[in-house]
Length: 265
Image 1: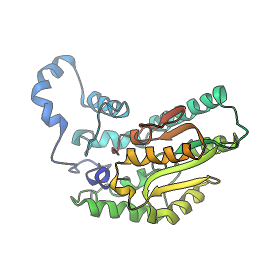
Image 2: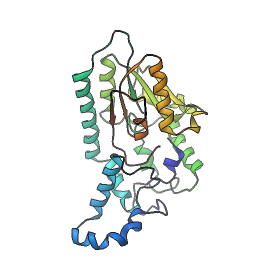
Image 3: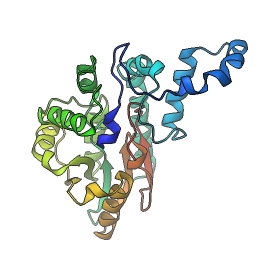
């Protein structure tokens, strides 16, 4: 996960300073009159912001708008988030049921991202609700803090994803995990995945030193290209960030899980 994406992320408590820039403050003067007459509430605004992040209309943000910190935090721990993930999993199953036929060459493949696709980082952000780390301005400090948490191997499985993972394996697809985690986290990542029940993937691809010079989207696109050159047929990609899904070559279908917490590019 990019240090930039973690630099100014939100906490789950009210009162944390998430950044100097705030979109509501920026646009308030222009919208006050119209909002007053239209009856637009803060909840309406924050839900609109979240939806437009998911639609990839809002890109490259460094901070969640300050007024929406609490709202986004509640969403990520809500029943609605779990239902949204479940619906994505169900649509994946429907796609495979209607379209997938196992080939004879053993080269049918599926790609998963890891963070907030298979493993949840929500406990990390909840743990730092007082801003002791996230309030710091240094990207290195925040990146180090996140990686230290990853080394603890304590991330839980994203609900509904463990069942989907094993369903896809049972259909005979080879599973590739392509993550923006760095190579030195390999042992911790494997231990954490196995601990919560993810087993039997074909390859775990992490970022080496050279990969860190490239945008995440370019890095993941290149890894997909190499898989195709090895003869794999990419049936699907599932991730929580658009950078996991965009670019060519891609797969027959892509499925995005909700995540308005941060933006990787």
